[in-house]
Amino acid sequence: MYNLKIISSTVRPGRKGPIIAAWIAEAATKSGHFNVEVLDLGEVNLPLMNEPHHPAMKKYEHGYTKQWSAKIDEADAFIFVTAEYDYGYPAPLRNALEYLLHEWGYKAAGIVSYGGVSAGTRASQALKADLSTLRMVPLSEQVNIPFFTQFINEQGQLVPNEISVKAADSLIKQLARWTKGLKLIKEDRA
Image 1 (cartoon, rainbow, N blue to C red):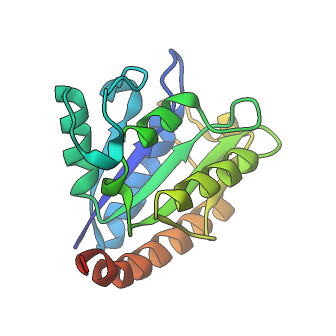
Image 2: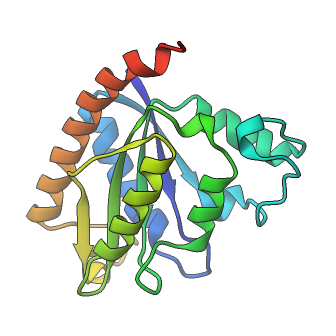
């Protein structure tokens, strides 16, 4: 099985990202392809990038950076769960990405976005562009949930419609396939 890190990008009080991250984590676990861990940026709580050395050097001085590096390095694949803020993805996610460089490379990345009428699609497009510069492979399959609050029940769980369930299934299947292929590239340190 592959190690999948699901990164929930929102940090502000009242956020719904962890609800959506829990749903996609359950779906990925049920697939049988992945050992799943959710990394909630609201709990990771990285300060605004303050390492004195460029991430390419991997000369981290802060304990939280070393912990973040270890968590990301052990991943074989990612799913980023992102809201859409001002037509883009949240700043804490950008900050978390920029803390590291080599740890992200040669890994497949899925995206689950949510929002209003746009379903977070503008955020996912911006995120895809940035992920590829970190040598990740962002998949074309993704889950985009419009008017997402209508799918959150009284118990605080996401109860998605059939479209979102099918999209998640497709994303997870492709993520497993790409992870298998990229593992060879990742392990070739030449």
